[in-house]
Amino acid sequence: MKARWFSLMCALSVVALLVVACGPTPQPTEAPKPTVAAKPTEAAKPTEAAKPTEAAKPTEAAKPAEAKCPLAVEDGAVITFSGWGDETEQQIYRDSIERFKKVCPTVTVNYEPIPADFQTKLKAQMAGGTAPDVFYVDDQLMTAFGPTGQLLALDGYMAEAGVSRDDFIPALLTIFTLEGKTYGLPKDWGTLGLVYIPEVFDQAGVAYPTGEWTWDDLRAAARAIADKTDYGGFCQNADWARFAPWVFSNGGAYATDDLSKALLDTPQVKEMAQYVYDMKKEGSLVTAADVGASWCGEAIGKKLVGMTLEGGWMVNFMRQNYPDQKWAAVLIPKGPVTRADVIFTNAIGVNASTKYPRAAAAFTLYVTSRENQAEIVKTGFAYSTHPDQVDLVVDANDRAIAGGGVLSDSRVAYWGPNTGKINDVVSKALERVYLGDQTVDESFAQAQQEADAALKGQ
Image (cartoon, rainbow, N blue to C red; front, side, top):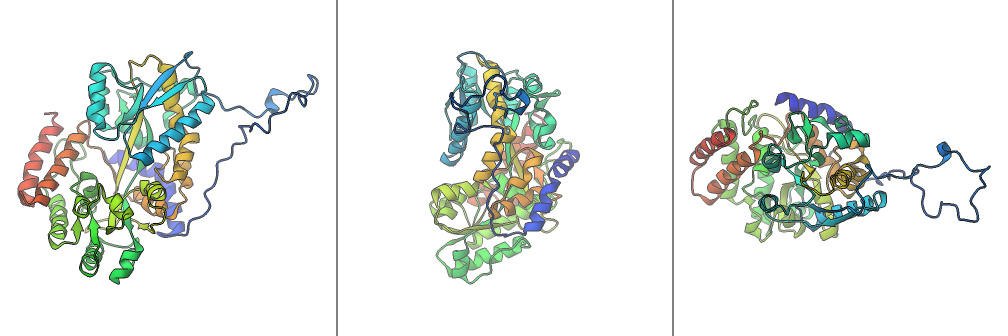
Protein backbone atom coordinates (compact mmCIF):
# COMPACT_ATOMS: atom_id res chain seq x y z
CA MET A 1 0.00 0.00 0.00
CA LYS A 2 2.85 2.44 0.81
CA ALA A 3 4.12 2.04 -2.70
CA ARG A 4 0.72 3.10 -3.96
CA TRP A 5 0.78 6.32 -1.94
CA PHE A 6 4.36 6.95 -3.04
CA SER A 7 3.42 6.62 -6.69
CA LEU A 8 0.63 9.13 -6.21
CA MET A 9 2.92 11.60 -4.52
CA CYS A 10 5.48 11.24 -7.30
CA ALA A 11 2.86 11.86 -9.94
CA LEU A 12 1.53 14.89 -8.08
CA SER A 13 4.79 16.34 -6.82
CA VAL A 14 4.73 19.16 -9.32
CA VAL A 15 1.64 20.53 -7.62
CA ALA A 16 3.75 21.29 -4.59
CA LEU A 17 5.66 23.89 -6.54
CA LEU A 18 2.42 25.59 -7.43
CA VAL A 19 1.14 25.58 -3.86
CA VAL A 20 4.42 26.79 -2.38
CA ALA A 21 4.84 29.49 -4.96
CA CYS A 22 1.33 30.85 -4.51
CA GLY A 23 0.95 30.47 -0.75
CA PRO A 24 -2.17 29.35 1.05
CA THR A 25 -4.28 32.38 0.10
CA PRO A 26 -2.96 33.87 -3.17
CA GLN A 27 -5.02 36.25 -5.26
CA PRO A 28 -6.82 34.52 -8.12
CA THR A 29 -5.55 35.12 -11.62
CA GLU A 30 -7.24 34.83 -14.96
CA ALA A 31 -7.66 31.17 -15.78
CA PRO A 32 -5.49 30.15 -18.75
CA LYS A 33 -7.67 29.06 -21.59
CA PRO A 34 -6.62 25.95 -23.51
CA THR A 35 -5.89 26.77 -27.11
CA VAL A 36 -8.14 25.35 -29.79
CA ALA A 37 -5.95 26.10 -32.76
CA ALA A 38 -6.44 22.58 -34.04
CA LYS A 39 -10.20 23.12 -34.21
CA PRO A 40 -11.16 25.79 -36.77
CA THR A 41 -14.23 27.88 -36.06
CA GLU A 42 -17.07 28.17 -38.54
CA ALA A 43 -15.97 31.69 -39.38
CA ALA A 44 -12.50 30.44 -40.24
CA LYS A 45 -13.77 27.93 -42.79
CA PRO A 46 -13.43 29.14 -46.39
CA THR A 47 -16.68 29.92 -48.15
CA GLU A 48 -17.57 28.11 -51.34
CA ALA A 49 -16.49 31.09 -53.42
CA ALA A 50 -13.21 31.41 -51.62
CA LYS A 51 -12.16 27.76 -51.90
CA PRO A 52 -8.71 27.44 -53.44
CA THR A 53 -8.27 25.78 -56.79
CA GLU A 54 -6.86 22.28 -56.95
CA ALA A 55 -3.46 23.69 -57.80
CA ALA A 56 -3.50 26.05 -54.85
CA LYS A 57 -5.10 23.57 -52.44
CA PRO A 58 -3.01 23.31 -49.26
CA THR A 59 -1.42 20.04 -48.44
CA GLU A 60 -2.91 17.78 -45.79
CA ALA A 61 -0.08 18.70 -43.44
CA ALA A 62 -0.94 22.41 -43.79
CA LYS A 63 -4.61 21.97 -42.83
CA PRO A 64 -5.62 22.36 -39.20
CA ALA A 65 -6.61 18.99 -37.83
CA GLU A 66 -10.31 18.51 -37.16
CA ALA A 67 -11.20 17.20 -33.71
CA LYS A 68 -12.11 13.56 -34.15
CA CYS A 69 -14.10 11.01 -32.24
CA PRO A 70 -11.75 8.82 -30.17
CA LEU A 71 -13.09 5.70 -31.92
CA ALA A 72 -15.06 4.72 -35.00
CA VAL A 73 -18.50 4.10 -33.51
CA GLU A 74 -21.57 2.05 -34.38
CA ASP A 75 -24.15 3.60 -36.72
CA GLY A 76 -27.09 5.11 -34.90
CA ALA A 77 -25.58 4.55 -31.45
CA VAL A 78 -27.73 5.70 -28.55
CA ILE A 79 -26.22 5.36 -25.07
CA THR A 80 -27.34 6.23 -21.55
CA PHE A 81 -24.99 7.78 -19.01
CA SER A 82 -25.64 7.91 -15.25
CA GLY A 83 -23.82 9.29 -12.25
CA TRP A 84 -24.58 10.76 -8.86
CA GLY A 85 -24.18 14.34 -7.70
CA ASP A 86 -26.18 17.49 -7.09
CA GLU A 87 -27.23 19.98 -9.74
CA THR A 88 -23.74 21.48 -9.81
CA GLU A 89 -22.13 18.17 -10.71
CA GLN A 90 -24.92 17.32 -13.13
CA GLN A 91 -24.28 20.54 -15.05
CA ILE A 92 -20.59 19.65 -15.32
CA TYR A 93 -21.53 16.49 -17.20
CA ARG A 94 -24.26 18.07 -19.28
CA ASP A 95 -21.58 20.42 -20.55
CA SER A 96 -19.23 17.46 -21.10
CA ILE A 97 -21.90 15.72 -23.17
CA GLU A 98 -22.30 18.81 -25.34
CA ARG A 99 -18.55 18.87 -25.98
CA PHE A 100 -18.62 15.15 -26.81
CA LYS A 101 -21.38 15.73 -29.37
CA LYS A 102 -19.07 18.07 -31.27
CA VAL A 103 -16.46 15.36 -31.76
CA CYS A 104 -18.80 12.36 -32.02
CA PRO A 105 -21.95 13.89 -33.56
CA THR A 106 -23.46 10.56 -34.59
CA VAL A 107 -23.73 9.32 -31.00
CA THR A 108 -26.80 10.24 -28.95
CA VAL A 109 -26.15 10.42 -25.20
CA ASN A 110 -29.09 10.32 -22.82
CA TYR A 111 -28.08 11.62 -19.41
CA GLU A 112 -29.97 10.07 -16.49
CA PRO A 113 -28.42 11.23 -13.19
CA ILE A 114 -29.21 9.36 -9.98
CA PRO A 115 -28.52 11.88 -7.18
CA ALA A 116 -29.30 9.57 -4.24
CA ASP A 117 -28.69 5.87 -3.46
CA PHE A 118 -26.72 5.51 -6.68
CA GLN A 119 -24.96 2.25 -5.82
CA THR A 120 -28.14 0.53 -4.63
CA LYS A 121 -30.18 1.61 -7.64
CA LEU A 122 -27.45 0.78 -10.14
CA LYS A 123 -27.01 -2.69 -8.69
CA ALA A 124 -30.75 -3.27 -9.02
CA GLN A 125 -30.67 -2.04 -12.62
CA MET A 126 -27.74 -4.29 -13.41
CA ALA A 127 -29.55 -7.28 -11.96
CA GLY A 128 -32.65 -6.43 -13.99
CA GLY A 129 -30.78 -5.83 -17.26
CA THR A 130 -31.71 -2.14 -17.38
CA ALA A 131 -28.44 -0.55 -16.28
CA PRO A 132 -27.06 2.42 -18.25
CA ASP A 133 -24.37 1.94 -20.87
CA VAL A 134 -21.87 4.19 -19.09
CA PHE A 135 -21.81 5.08 -15.41
CA TYR A 136 -19.73 6.24 -12.47
CA VAL A 137 -17.69 3.50 -10.83
CA ASP A 138 -16.46 3.74 -7.25
CA ASP A 139 -14.68 1.10 -5.18
CA GLN A 140 -17.99 -0.54 -4.20
CA LEU A 141 -19.20 -0.87 -7.78
CA MET A 142 -15.78 -2.05 -8.95
CA THR A 143 -15.94 -4.75 -6.28
CA ALA A 144 -19.48 -5.69 -7.33
CA PHE A 145 -19.11 -5.62 -11.12
CA GLY A 146 -15.41 -6.15 -11.90
CA PRO A 147 -14.99 -9.78 -10.82
CA THR A 148 -18.40 -10.74 -12.27
CA GLY A 149 -17.56 -9.59 -15.79
CA GLN A 150 -20.21 -6.86 -15.80
CA LEU A 151 -17.73 -4.10 -16.62
CA LEU A 152 -16.15 -3.78 -20.05
CA ALA A 153 -12.35 -3.98 -20.17
CA LEU A 154 -11.20 -0.76 -21.82
CA ASP A 155 -7.59 -1.59 -22.70
CA GLY A 156 -8.21 -2.54 -26.32
CA TYR A 157 -10.23 0.61 -26.98
CA MET A 158 -7.62 2.70 -25.22
CA ALA A 159 -4.87 1.29 -27.44
CA GLU A 160 -6.93 1.93 -30.56
CA ALA A 161 -7.52 5.55 -29.47
CA GLY A 162 -3.89 6.10 -28.52
CA VAL A 163 -4.70 6.42 -24.83
CA SER A 164 -2.29 4.91 -22.30
CA ARG A 165 -2.60 4.13 -18.61
CA ASP A 166 0.50 6.29 -18.29
CA ASP A 167 -1.63 9.27 -19.29
CA PHE A 168 -3.25 9.13 -15.84
CA ILE A 169 -1.93 9.62 -12.30
CA PRO A 170 -0.87 6.02 -11.57
CA ALA A 171 -2.34 5.54 -8.09
CA LEU A 172 -5.80 6.62 -9.24
CA LEU A 173 -6.02 3.57 -11.51
CA THR A 174 -5.35 1.08 -8.73
CA ILE A 175 -8.96 0.74 -7.65
CA PHE A 176 -10.16 0.15 -11.20
CA THR A 177 -7.61 -2.46 -12.27
CA LEU A 178 -8.27 -6.19 -12.03
CA GLU A 179 -5.86 -8.88 -13.21
CA GLY A 180 -3.98 -6.31 -15.27
CA LYS A 181 -7.05 -4.99 -17.10
CA THR A 182 -8.57 -1.53 -16.87
CA TYR A 183 -12.29 -1.42 -16.04
CA GLY A 184 -12.68 2.29 -15.36
CA LEU A 185 -10.87 5.52 -16.16
CA PRO A 186 -10.54 8.00 -13.29
CA LYS A 187 -12.73 11.01 -13.96
CA ASP A 188 -11.31 13.32 -11.30
CA TRP A 189 -9.77 13.44 -7.87
CA GLY A 190 -10.14 15.67 -4.89
CA THR A 191 -9.11 16.30 -1.34
CA LEU A 192 -10.25 18.41 1.61
CA GLY A 193 -9.32 21.83 2.92
CA LEU A 194 -10.50 24.08 5.73
CA VAL A 195 -13.30 26.23 4.31
CA TYR A 196 -14.43 29.30 6.26
CA ILE A 197 -16.44 32.54 6.14
CA PRO A 198 -14.30 35.61 6.92
CA GLU A 199 -17.33 37.65 8.07
CA VAL A 200 -18.07 35.13 10.82
CA PHE A 201 -14.48 35.35 12.06
CA ASP A 202 -14.72 39.14 12.04
CA GLN A 203 -17.84 39.03 14.18
CA ALA A 204 -16.19 36.65 16.64
CA GLY A 205 -13.01 38.75 16.76
CA VAL A 206 -10.91 35.75 15.72
CA ALA A 207 -7.97 35.83 13.29
CA TYR A 208 -8.53 34.05 9.97
CA PRO A 209 -7.25 30.49 9.55
CA THR A 210 -3.86 29.98 7.93
CA GLY A 211 -2.09 27.06 6.30
CA GLU A 212 -0.14 26.63 9.53
CA TRP A 213 -3.16 25.92 11.70
CA THR A 214 -3.48 22.86 13.94
CA TRP A 215 -6.63 21.09 15.06
CA ASP A 216 -6.21 22.91 18.37
CA ASP A 217 -6.32 26.24 16.52
CA LEU A 218 -9.49 25.12 14.75
CA ARG A 219 -11.10 24.08 18.02
CA ALA A 220 -10.28 27.34 19.77
CA ALA A 221 -11.69 29.38 16.88
CA ALA A 222 -14.82 27.22 16.66
CA ARG A 223 -15.41 27.64 20.39
CA ALA A 224 -15.05 31.43 20.11
CA ILE A 225 -17.47 31.59 17.19
CA ALA A 226 -20.04 29.48 19.04
CA ASP A 227 -19.68 31.58 22.20
CA LYS A 228 -19.62 35.05 20.64
CA THR A 229 -21.92 34.79 17.60
CA ASP A 230 -25.15 33.15 16.49
CA TYR A 231 -23.28 30.89 14.05
CA GLY A 232 -22.20 27.31 14.50
CA GLY A 233 -18.44 27.12 14.98
CA PHE A 234 -17.32 24.09 12.96
CA CYS A 235 -19.53 21.73 10.93
CA GLN A 236 -18.73 18.03 10.61
CA ASN A 237 -21.10 15.09 10.27
CA ALA A 238 -20.48 11.53 11.42
CA ASP A 239 -18.64 10.87 8.19
CA TRP A 240 -15.66 8.61 7.54
CA ALA A 241 -14.31 10.94 4.83
CA ARG A 242 -14.15 14.11 6.93
CA PHE A 243 -12.86 12.11 9.88
CA ALA A 244 -10.03 10.57 7.84
CA PRO A 245 -7.68 13.60 7.94
CA TRP A 246 -7.99 13.69 11.74
CA VAL A 247 -6.93 10.04 11.91
CA PHE A 248 -4.17 10.29 9.30
CA SER A 249 -2.74 13.36 11.05
CA ASN A 250 -2.43 11.32 14.24
CA GLY A 251 -0.44 8.62 12.46
CA GLY A 252 -3.46 6.33 12.14
CA ALA A 253 -5.33 4.53 9.38
CA TYR A 254 -8.49 2.49 9.03
CA ALA A 255 -6.60 -0.71 8.14
CA THR A 256 -3.07 -2.07 7.89
CA ASP A 257 -1.18 -1.54 4.65
CA ASP A 258 -1.52 -5.21 3.76
CA LEU A 259 -5.30 -5.00 4.47
CA SER A 260 -5.11 -7.96 6.84
CA LYS A 261 -6.47 -6.19 9.90
CA ALA A 262 -8.53 -3.14 10.84
CA LEU A 263 -6.94 -0.43 12.97
CA LEU A 264 -10.05 1.19 14.39
CA ASP A 265 -9.57 0.10 18.01
CA THR A 266 -6.21 1.88 18.27
CA PRO A 267 -5.12 5.00 20.15
CA GLN A 268 -4.41 6.83 16.89
CA VAL A 269 -8.06 6.52 15.83
CA LYS A 270 -9.79 6.70 19.19
CA GLU A 271 -7.89 9.76 20.36
CA MET A 272 -9.18 11.73 17.41
CA ALA A 273 -12.71 10.35 17.72
CA GLN A 274 -12.73 11.49 21.35
CA TYR A 275 -11.35 14.88 20.31
CA VAL A 276 -14.12 15.38 17.76
CA TYR A 277 -16.77 14.20 20.20
CA ASP A 278 -15.47 16.53 22.91
CA MET A 279 -15.91 19.39 20.45
CA LYS A 280 -19.49 18.30 19.85
CA LYS A 281 -20.22 18.10 23.59
CA GLU A 282 -18.84 21.57 24.22
CA GLY A 283 -20.85 22.99 21.31
CA SER A 284 -17.95 24.02 19.08
CA LEU A 285 -18.84 21.29 16.56
CA VAL A 286 -22.27 20.96 14.94
CA THR A 287 -23.65 18.69 12.24
CA ALA A 288 -25.36 19.99 9.13
CA ALA A 289 -28.71 18.81 10.50
CA ASP A 290 -28.10 20.74 13.73
CA VAL A 291 -28.18 24.02 11.79
CA GLY A 292 -30.84 23.08 9.23
CA ALA A 293 -28.60 22.24 6.25
CA SER A 294 -28.42 19.10 4.12
CA TRP A 295 -24.60 19.04 4.19
CA CYS A 296 -21.85 21.17 5.66
CA GLY A 297 -21.01 22.83 2.35
CA GLU A 298 -24.57 24.13 2.20
CA ALA A 299 -24.19 25.34 5.78
CA ILE A 300 -21.32 27.52 4.53
CA GLY A 301 -23.40 28.75 1.59
CA LYS A 302 -26.31 29.67 3.86
CA LYS A 303 -23.90 31.28 6.35
CA LEU A 304 -24.95 29.04 9.22
CA VAL A 305 -21.46 28.04 10.42
CA GLY A 306 -18.00 29.54 10.45
CA MET A 307 -15.96 26.57 9.18
CA THR A 308 -16.05 23.09 7.71
CA LEU A 309 -13.86 20.63 5.80
CA GLU A 310 -14.80 20.46 2.12
CA GLY A 311 -13.15 19.99 -1.24
CA GLY A 312 -12.59 21.85 -4.48
CA TRP A 313 -16.19 21.19 -5.48
CA MET A 314 -17.06 24.15 -3.24
CA VAL A 315 -15.76 26.56 -5.89
CA ASN A 316 -18.43 25.76 -8.43
CA PHE A 317 -21.10 25.05 -5.79
CA MET A 318 -20.69 28.50 -4.26
CA ARG A 319 -20.37 30.20 -7.62
CA GLN A 320 -23.63 28.74 -8.86
CA ASN A 321 -25.70 28.74 -5.69
CA TYR A 322 -24.29 31.47 -3.43
CA PRO A 323 -22.41 33.87 -5.71
CA ASP A 324 -22.59 36.76 -3.23
CA GLN A 325 -21.28 34.77 -0.26
CA LYS A 326 -17.66 35.56 0.61
CA TRP A 327 -15.65 32.50 1.61
CA ALA A 328 -12.08 31.30 1.69
CA ALA A 329 -10.04 28.12 2.14
CA VAL A 330 -6.68 27.07 3.53
CA LEU A 331 -4.70 23.85 3.82
CA ILE A 332 -5.98 21.08 6.09
CA PRO A 333 -4.94 21.61 9.75
CA LYS A 334 -2.05 19.73 11.30
CA GLY A 335 -2.56 16.96 13.86
CA PRO A 336 -0.49 15.65 16.76
CA VAL A 337 1.86 13.70 14.47
CA THR A 338 1.68 15.18 10.97
CA ARG A 339 -0.39 17.12 8.47
CA ALA A 340 -2.26 14.70 6.22
CA ASP A 341 -5.31 14.70 3.97
CA VAL A 342 -7.62 12.19 2.33
CA ILE A 343 -7.67 11.77 -1.46
CA PHE A 344 -10.82 10.70 -3.31
CA THR A 345 -11.23 9.36 -6.80
CA ASN A 346 -13.96 7.75 -8.89
CA ALA A 347 -14.02 6.47 -12.45
CA ILE A 348 -16.27 6.13 -15.44
CA GLY A 349 -16.87 2.61 -16.71
CA VAL A 350 -18.85 0.80 -19.37
CA ASN A 351 -21.57 -1.81 -18.96
CA ALA A 352 -20.27 -5.02 -20.52
CA SER A 353 -23.79 -5.68 -21.84
CA THR A 354 -24.07 -2.41 -23.74
CA LYS A 355 -25.45 -2.67 -27.28
CA TYR A 356 -22.95 -0.06 -28.42
CA PRO A 357 -19.58 -0.83 -26.82
CA ARG A 358 -17.56 1.34 -29.18
CA ALA A 359 -19.77 4.39 -28.68
CA ALA A 360 -19.81 3.82 -24.93
CA ALA A 361 -16.02 3.45 -24.85
CA ALA A 362 -15.59 6.55 -27.02
CA PHE A 363 -17.70 8.56 -24.59
CA THR A 364 -15.71 7.27 -21.62
CA LEU A 365 -12.41 8.07 -23.31
CA TYR A 366 -13.55 11.57 -24.21
CA VAL A 367 -15.03 12.51 -20.83
CA THR A 368 -11.81 11.46 -19.07
CA SER A 369 -9.57 13.02 -21.73
CA ARG A 370 -7.21 15.93 -21.26
CA GLU A 371 -9.43 18.09 -23.47
CA ASN A 372 -12.55 17.57 -21.38
CA GLN A 373 -10.86 17.53 -18.00
CA ALA A 374 -9.18 20.84 -18.76
CA GLU A 375 -12.66 22.33 -19.07
CA ILE A 376 -13.84 20.69 -15.84
CA VAL A 377 -10.83 22.00 -13.90
CA LYS A 378 -11.75 25.56 -14.90
CA THR A 379 -15.11 25.20 -13.15
CA GLY A 380 -13.39 24.39 -9.84
CA PHE A 381 -15.34 21.15 -9.53
CA ALA A 382 -12.39 18.76 -9.39
CA TYR A 383 -8.80 18.24 -10.46
CA SER A 384 -7.66 16.58 -13.65
CA THR A 385 -6.45 12.99 -13.41
CA HIS A 386 -3.71 13.79 -15.94
CA PRO A 387 -0.44 14.70 -14.17
CA ASP A 388 0.54 17.20 -16.85
CA GLN A 389 -2.56 19.31 -16.12
CA VAL A 390 -1.97 20.05 -12.47
CA ASP A 391 -1.06 23.66 -13.24
CA LEU A 392 -4.59 24.30 -14.51
CA VAL A 393 -5.79 24.79 -10.92
CA VAL A 394 -5.80 28.59 -10.69
CA ASP A 395 -8.54 29.58 -8.25
CA ALA A 396 -6.92 30.67 -4.97
CA ASN A 397 -9.26 28.63 -2.76
CA ASP A 398 -8.99 25.62 -5.04
CA ARG A 399 -5.20 25.78 -4.92
CA ALA A 400 -5.21 25.91 -1.14
CA ILE A 401 -7.46 22.85 -0.92
CA ALA A 402 -5.47 20.95 -3.55
CA GLY A 403 -2.34 21.38 -1.46
CA GLY A 404 -3.54 18.56 0.77
CA GLY A 405 -3.08 16.14 -2.09
CA VAL A 406 0.70 16.53 -2.10
CA LEU A 407 1.32 16.17 1.62
CA SER A 408 3.63 13.21 2.15
CA ASP A 409 1.30 11.44 4.60
CA SER A 410 -1.95 11.95 2.67
CA ARG A 411 -3.65 8.75 1.56
CA VAL A 412 -6.01 7.60 -1.17
CA ALA A 413 -9.24 6.50 0.50
CA TYR A 414 -8.93 2.85 -0.47
CA TRP A 415 -8.90 -0.21 1.80
CA GLY A 416 -9.11 -2.97 -0.78
CA PRO A 417 -12.20 -4.53 -2.37
CA ASN A 418 -14.28 -3.93 0.76
CA THR A 419 -13.48 -0.25 1.12
CA GLY A 420 -17.13 0.74 1.15
CA LYS A 421 -17.89 -1.57 4.07
CA ILE A 422 -14.93 -0.31 6.09
CA ASN A 423 -15.91 3.31 5.52
CA ASP A 424 -19.53 2.60 6.48
CA VAL A 425 -18.32 0.97 9.70
CA VAL A 426 -16.37 4.13 10.59
CA SER A 427 -19.31 6.43 9.87
CA LYS A 428 -21.66 4.31 11.98
CA ALA A 429 -19.16 4.20 14.82
CA LEU A 430 -18.98 7.99 14.80
CA GLU A 431 -22.76 8.24 14.64
CA ARG A 432 -23.16 6.07 17.75
CA VAL A 433 -20.70 8.32 19.56
CA TYR A 434 -22.38 11.52 18.35
CA LEU A 435 -25.76 10.23 19.57
CA GLY A 436 -24.33 9.23 22.92
CA ASP A 437 -25.36 5.61 22.42
CA GLN A 438 -21.83 4.36 23.11
CA THR A 439 -18.54 5.70 24.37
CA VAL A 440 -15.65 6.04 21.95
CA ASP A 441 -14.04 2.90 23.38
CA GLU A 442 -17.25 0.87 23.08
CA SER A 443 -18.15 2.08 19.62
CA PHE A 444 -14.74 1.60 18.07
CA ALA A 445 -14.26 -1.80 19.69
CA GLN A 446 -17.44 -2.83 17.89
CA ALA A 447 -16.22 -1.15 14.72
CA GLN A 448 -12.95 -3.10 14.92
CA GLN A 449 -14.82 -6.41 14.88
CA GLU A 450 -17.07 -5.30 12.02
CA ALA A 451 -14.18 -3.97 9.96
CA ASP A 452 -12.10 -7.13 10.48
CA ALA A 453 -15.03 -9.17 9.21
CA ALA A 454 -15.40 -6.84 6.21
CA LEU A 455 -11.72 -7.18 5.34
CA LYS A 456 -12.23 -10.94 5.25
CA GLY A 457 -15.17 -10.48 2.89
CA GLN A 458 -17.73 -11.52 5.52
